[in-house]
Image 1 (cartoon, helix red, strand yellow):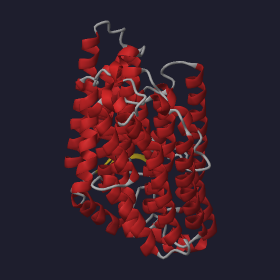
Image 2 (cartoon, one colour):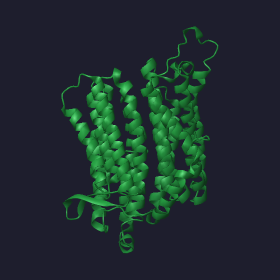
Image 3 (cartoon, one colour):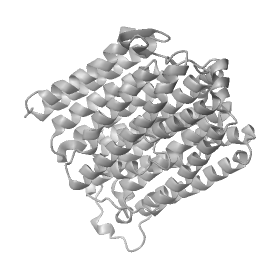
Image 4 (cartoon, helix red, strand yellow):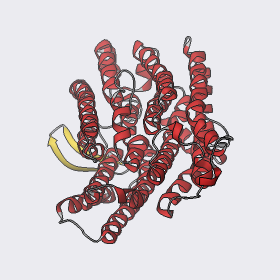
Length: 490
């Protein structure tokens, strides 16, 4: 069980050492230390998942009723898996990309610290522990947004901080009531409230649940608190954007899973006005994010709006509270993590190699970087939801789960909006592929020079692309595991 604590403390300690030590003039030493720390941290997380399953460890007590508690369960496995893979890929991609950025030591230091804090979130065993590290995640990831120090980065960082803290305080408001009326703050499948307490305080509990869903939904970019996300992602270094979009925003999704299925319970919220309003907000976000992405010319900002939309695919699956939709939502946590990390790394490689940042500037890019743009194309098909990618499977489960739920007009409106969003996703991602491989007769082939990125950039993208395909070709390896989880919590 102590592997849980070690897997949290080691990357945080390694990151602090990098931040506090003198400037490392030899870049090879800096990269060796960072790479070693990332690999050791990943191994520690895997050992924690394998050897601490079902174990519980109290680190210390804030009060008699508020222990700082860690526990590994099946939900931890899902979110830890995507965290480890994305951090390894983004970290090694950074070794090449960060050559043209300043203050590398600071960047790698905070990257390792955020890795440790995310591990703590995944292993949090009760609501107060989760909240403490949720707040810490905002503070430790803020320097990644502020990294280049420009006025735009500072303003985006302040927006990120303001939105995140406001959302967290809304959640804290709810925690006060849960601590007062709940049997415990420890996460328990099905919820922590007794039938008597739920019946006696139903209305106030519903208000609290809604406030907490909105508060934690800020981190997941749910409308109407989504504006920080398209501001923060484009100004961060590309590998940091990959981590932000693929993993950090999913802290909000993890919070929602814990609140709905481990604190209040799906049976308590199902059929209430909270579920109705929540589904309306998620479908609004899906559509709105797709439209804004379609209209955005800057490629990184386009992907940021895409994240707003795709995260609410997951939230919609959680809101329907049907076994099929929940399976699709949890599967999309993995698929979206791999796909969006790959997309941001592809875009980062293009920016690094060419300096081009707008979609309209990328004519012929497929001729120059065929391997990279083929990877971009495959994972784009995954985000659209086209077989044989993992994105097709997750969206299939989401649509079928919604249809089977029979919830008023949502049972048909949900799949319809998901389909429209998929068409818009094709509209904002595939033009890069089409113009990249088919630049037209006016393209000057005489200036064509193939310039694939280095292996530090190419290999992480290839790994994430292969994972996207494997999730689509062999989905039963994951969906069976998810089905077992869902039986316990729904």
